[in-house]
Image 1 (cartoon, rainbow, N blue to C red):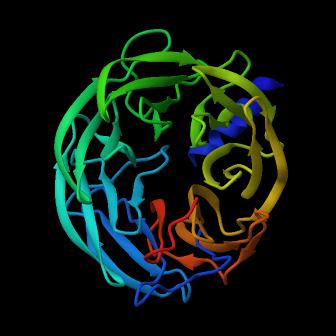
Image 2: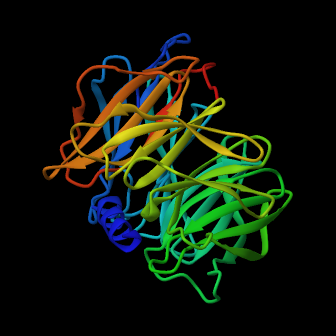
Length: 360
């Protein structure tokens, strides 16, 4: 029975928010929602106004897309900078905010095909197909590559292409990368940081027996992380280098996560729903198995900040962007009908808050 459930979840998980509990304008700034077309030839980003849901811009990433089965292919920094993976070009495109618009800034080259991104510790971190890179961040500008290391599986060796899921920083001294390797349980790589620079070889931690596919995750300020175990329909608490607790998700193919205060929202690909979790130092609790539905398709990434949550999904050969607002109790309210993105395989979503409205 477990194998049947595992296979069904796997099929669902591999087959987007921006609502605002409140959307505050600061001066002339709006809250923006960004996704990428993920075109394998000419990748682009699409920029929407979170309030009106109107398309404001379509901009070239000056590279090729093509990534899949990942999380955080787009990441924003404090409403001022947006990074986007060009998986087919081994580059990351950087965009600066200029008023209510974005403008292309530069490309940085990565040591392997980029998959997932995070900002912290005055660095940009990039998890690629087989490596992790750190880039110096100076005055909101990404500078030079100052560290890199190979990813590794719990059983040894480099991960196969397509297994890298997400990167996320848990503090000043380490970051995590999830690696999915069905039918093996999967791996969480713990990568050491020295003054923000990637250093040394990762410690590779296996997902617990009876679970499968550590995928999307959200970190807490205490250094712990909630991690989806996507293909066994479970969610886990990762702390101090191991899984401290695992619970049944109650939904099919829990895949992507984003945190708002104490709440973590999970996009469940198989069920086409969003769940709400709460994590403590020892346990993870399902606060609401269904906090919202995603009727237009299977979710494919999620992000939230400053009262706006956005989900990108795929269905019937099209991608859709759903926008929700959330309040202090983590209750979600749809902000109008889903937006048709106009491409089949849009990937990644980032909420770029109005100036002065960065939260979480």
